[in-house]
Every structure is written in structure tokens, then in C-alpha cells.
Image (cartoon, rainbow, N blue to C red; front, side, top):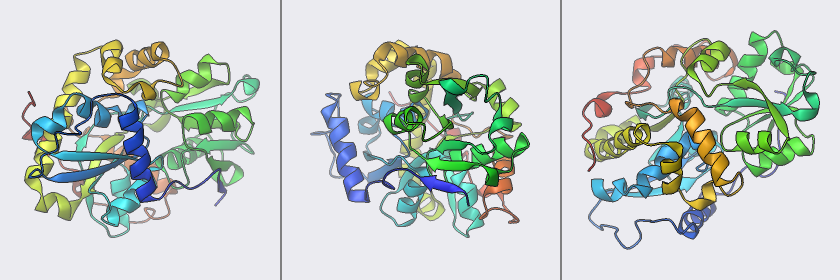
Length: 352
């Protein structure tokens, strides 16, 4: 496979936990410290890149005080690579993952059972950026042949989406090099150093790279129209997913979590970017600046799922993408109905 990785693969689980806790507490934002209920269930959720706007609901729910109100001690852990987060879930180190829904399809293909219990993004929110010096040279993914392309990590959702876009535009993915460069500063540094020509990333990295002249937007999947044009249909992205056995054995806890996230999604719909940003830790917009962070939120607020229900045509689109390029999925019979559930969203009650 013509993929490479820049930098370390990611911190070990304990290190990631420590860094996430430090980052959250150092922000000066409200935390649940001092209000932990020893009798309440403890749930650790590993998020595939906490500062990305596509994963905003996980921290926003904490900032709104919803975890305390539902009576669950939630520990959020940052892990930039969604695939690594999934492995930690399978190892029992975390109970849930904040990541792309499509991981559940890949897991079923490997004989493992997990399911998304709430859908937070109805479209990917991903953007394909290219270096500014390539404007007019790279005009579409048809020009990816021989190029170095940035992805979050090998085997990540951005990896398969990049391959899908390449093939759809007539380029064999074997004729490109895909490099794991993460997001944020590592992504931008890779582009500035010309380690990558183009790359797939999300807000607020997009705004920072465009505003400082590092990159231009080649393809934009922050809108429903852009997503359908690129991928052929609705592509549900961020979700909370868990192993099916854990869900079945802890339904009361899962329901509380879903109550919190459905309420958070509703809160997002009722507020503008400025109000949302005011609730987030300052560290989340430090690199790009609060004004740009707010502008990005306002422009892409439509990516957030207003209901939490899985989009009806979404799983089929995800399977079509993975079935093309994920060797673990190719040729396998997938029961999509077992990769997600709307049970908890349909029973959700508002958190007040």
C-alpha cells in the first residue's frame, strides 16, 4: 500500500489520557472536577481529534454541564487517529469512541460487533486543501496522480475517502502517496514544508491554512450539496459508537449519554457560532483565532445532525466507499442494520 506516516503514531493510552486532561483543565473552562458522583457510572470516551469542530459536541456537552446533569462521570480522551481510538475500545480501555460511523462497518467485516448510538454529523465536514503554489495546477482529484496527499492516518476515514475521490476521478490510488499528518499544526507544517501537495482535513485547520495563504480549497464537503457531489450521497460522520455487548449490558447509561448528546445537538441548532465558541475552551481556537473559529462554525453549522438519528441513506453511502478500498470490507456481506441503532435517540428526553 502506498501510504506513509509522518511523526509518531500517537501517544500511548495513559499518556493520551493525561494530555487530554491537562489540555481540558488548563483551558480555564468549567470542568466536573469536584462534582464527581462516586455512585454514578464512569464512562471513558476517546475522541478522534477533540479540537476539530466535527467533534465539538463531546466537549460542548461537558461545557454545558450535561454530563453532571445526567449523572454520568464522563472522561474525554483525545486521540488524533480514529483507528487507534477504535483499537482502544476493542481492548476495553475505553467504553466509547467519538469517531466516524464507518468504523462500525469495518469492524463488522472483521467479525466484531459495535454500533453507533447517536449520529452527530450528517455530512463529513471534510475539505480537500491543496498548497497555494499548486493553484491552477491541481484542479480536481483527477490531478492526484504522482502527488503526495495528507490524511489523518493510514486506515482512517480520510484515507478511504481520499482513495475514493481519486478513483472516482480516474486516478489509481496506487499512483499517489498518502501520508498520515494528523490535523492542526502538524497538517499545516506538512503543507508548508511541501511534504504534502494536498490533504483532507476539517475546521478549524481549514480556516487557518486558507487565511494565512498556505492552501486553497479544492473540494468542500462542509455542505450537503458538496458532500453529495463528492461522494454520491449523504455520508454520516461523527457518532458515538460502542461495542454492542457493552451497549446491551449498560442500556441505562447509554440512554443518559444519548440524552446529553441529543440535547447538545439541539442547543447547537438554537445558537450561532459566537455563542457556541463562548462555551468552548480557549485552547480550541487559539491557533486560528476566535473570530475565524466563529466564522467557520457559522458557515458549517449545517454539518451537525439536528436530531441525532442516522440519515436513512447514509450507511449505504459509507459502505460503497469502504467496499471500494478497505481490504477488510471488500467482498464481505455487511448487515448495515447492526452497525447503528436509533433506539436511544428515539427514546431521548431533554436535559434541563
